[in-house]
Image (cartoon, rainbow over all chains, first blue to last red; front, side, top):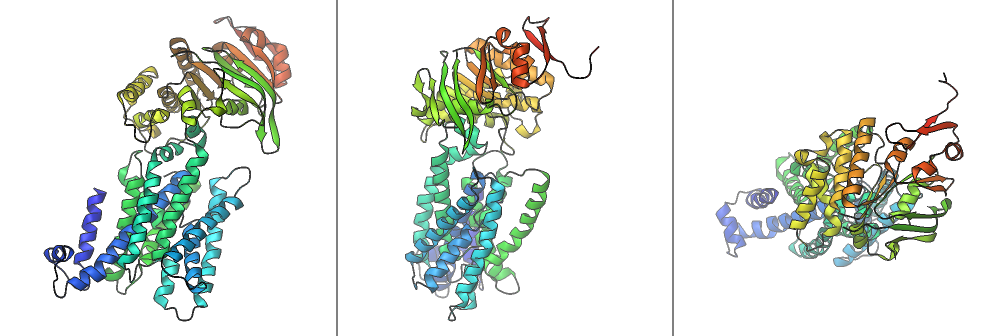
Length: 319
Length: 265
């Protein structure tokens, strides 16, 4: 069902835009035909954008649900606890200070994301790590990293506002197909690794002790999940910047849609992809001015964050 | 299913700098029910966690049927030894059937499909705990007593020879406490499952366990059948409580009546 929604979403965003392209024309262009007036729009503008949206969204969705499940707290998503912010700061640092480009930026972003994850873990360690302390420390670090990003951007005078916005709120403006390939490989590799651990991850939802009693190797599972999730989020961030709240929202939305105790990995990836795709479309065409996708998802995510915090005060919330 | 024995040797264990178990040796006989009792913070839960390999002891070791549990791969161990913690978390919206099916985790592999044996184990666990009719219900909707049955059913579906339970009756009303302990006794009698549990309620422990382990200050104070262990001297030394121990008119087991400062005739 979600898959069908996503397909429909992709096709619709290929058809609609500043100008309308009929479905048949879209299909012909995708098939390789040259249609004057449509080929450039569909193949050069809309397709790369849609592909990057889907890949980035799926990566954020997976990274989010992995963290939320591992720490059994919907607030423990990488975009709340500073991991995406860290990756973003890393990417900006790589571009502005080290003058890198291409895959090297991704590598620095991943390094920074992992570094932040490690830092959060170390700082919140006090005879074991509890969710609440880890989240608060993560939020604090996120705020600090955001100001570092802003500082770095200010030192780079040639940067346009659009580019700056990418690294602060996230945007898929100017998406290119050649950006999509590394992202696709990362999604396949790390997503697959995560998927192979889905049983262990599901079992962890019932508590560490119980999971260990059922034969889950806690250390190994935690390490695999954290590393793959951070890698997914960092790869995506290196392309689009930290698109606000996608990682945070995808899991809970997927949980509402799927209801029961089913594995949420794949649904969360699909929801993430759909969120970014539709958010970006809304930001481009449905609002009076053009906004980057991160602004749209931010507007969607903030009320949910408030709701969670209010609800968490009453009950100990899980997904 | 054959009965399995568990042996702890000179365990020293704790968290960080803090030593909680200080030289504990214990033999859990195969096919028997053992209850660990003692005052708060005496190390009874810690002992159970070491037996379940959730905590690595600084010294000493645990042998399951003569093999060091720390040498066994996690899955292999989980096929032989089950552990039910004090407050497991039911994922929101999960059904009874799904939760009980999770007990098959150690029997599943990356590429192993859900098998007829898995199906049978789950059905059997539901039947044994009288939960078959509620299989489709959401765990959130159940009462505390029913929920505890679901967790026990999950542990049953794991089909282990040894089952460790940390205070399986806490937070339950007295009728559900008796119900859960009856259920565990059925398992022990019918399947020969070796049961080790931490229990708060002394009289219930004496009634349901073949062997009582009284712990105090991180050491084993005494081990043996309830008749030998539940004495006025033990209650005084272990719990710091004056009491009278009489024979339970129903079971013939010892029964402890606390002597408080009030309430005398």
